[in-house]
Length: 68
Image (tube, rainbow, N blue to C red):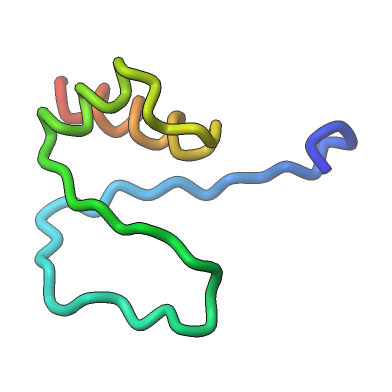
C-alpha cells in the first residue's frame, strides 16, 4: 500500500544480457512479452505506452543511464 510508505521497488538494468530462451511463466498472471530495442523503448515511453508507474520509472531511468 503506497499510501502507508511500504511501496518499495528494486530496479535493475542488465547490461550485456543475452536472450537464451523464452520465459516459463505458466504459474504467473497472463502477460504479453514484447522485445524492444533502445529506440523502440524511447518511442514507447514518449507515447505513454507503459501504463504502470514502476515500468515507466525503470525504462526512463535506464534510458537516462544509457545516454550518459
